[in-house]
Length: 390
Image (cartoon, rainbow, N blue to C red; front, side, top):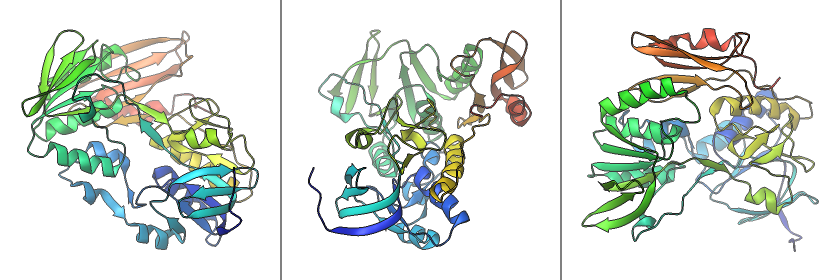
């Protein structure tokens, strides 16, 4: 690889990525040090918005651009940083600590990868397969909202967290929604069957049509709409198809640089990658073997990473971190047990909700799922759970 001798910019700390991970670690740095130069590089416009609000904006009567709470100029001034927006990073020379970008080469003392994750796209057949869209950032969301204007029928491929939240939001906005998933329930990786049944029933009552244990075989043009052929023989007609089958950490840039990757970019408990002075956090990072694409792990990682970037030695700790599912038709809070946890689910119905607890053979609480009125027990039960990382 040939590097230009001219380096346009030198920065003690360079962060790649302007999502919640990138901006949160900068805020944590500024709590500790107001003076150290920080440069943020992003291929996006660099405005700040809350990504979780993308799946609640319709019910909240928010237009896409109303979700922006800080422009690039606002964020640069507020945080005292240099921002290179709409700038693609194409390579990292970890030996010489130089980044190659669309605006030239940039040297760094410490580098943070906050690259996020991409929506997984399944290979689909049919002459309208290219019409399937996904939503992973505000620009894609704006395009999605334009596509569904004056439309009524939306099909969602995927009944996980993203798909289920979008289904609830679209139903609240007056759309007809079909949700398709190979699993036999919504939120198959998060909820026990008893809690999933409650969610399934309430969203069905609100208007969601579920299609489980099947997937899309073909998508073809049909008059002014799309004809969806499911593998179980059912045919659906929809105006728009949204793919929401899951997220894959962005690791390509790290792999090209020679960093160790697995499911995500591998980092230790100090958020260090396999290369000196290079760190990672957020949806792209695999922390001590864990990939947790949620807000709370990201916040914990940012609080640990900031002092490490400033010369301290801090390890990230993950307490129990319940996830709130944004489905107002049936509110849910879930803290799933660890993958290797041994135990059983115990479910108790109550008026307007359900409490499901995953317990060990000795009765120790290892996880929970709270539905409807039971969500008020979130704080009390979270205190009884073991930490995720100690």
